Length: 114
Figure 1 (cartoon, rainbow, N blue to C red):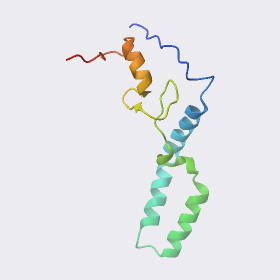
Figure 2 (cartoon, rainbow, N blue to C red):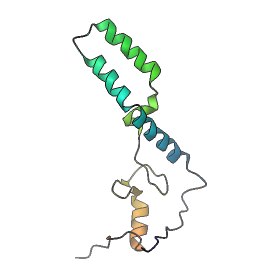
Figure 3 (cartoon, rainbow, N blue to C red):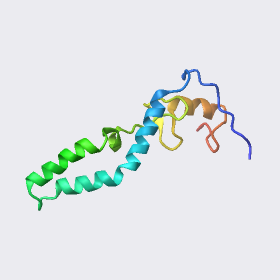
Figure 4 (cartoon, one colour):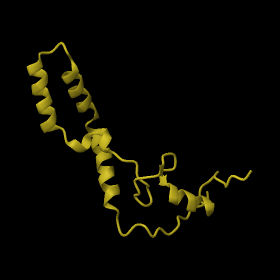
């Protein structure tokens, strides 16, 4: 199996804090997934009294961290940390996709000619 050599990336300087933060958020989403589902089921259950649902909602706001919400997770480029224009299959940005495809570093990808 040939080794893939990644190109030099001038966009990153040291470690990218956004990637680390996003990784921590993904771990929090996985850890609190069941808790969030239980809290949501209780707060949306119309058979329970309103006071109980409101009390559970307050518990939810204090006990579950905000970063455990799935909407706070952002798809980022695994190489540069860029948040916009990320190809979800390869998990790299459009810029890195183009440079790596031009250098032949992505298997099965070639320039389309018609």
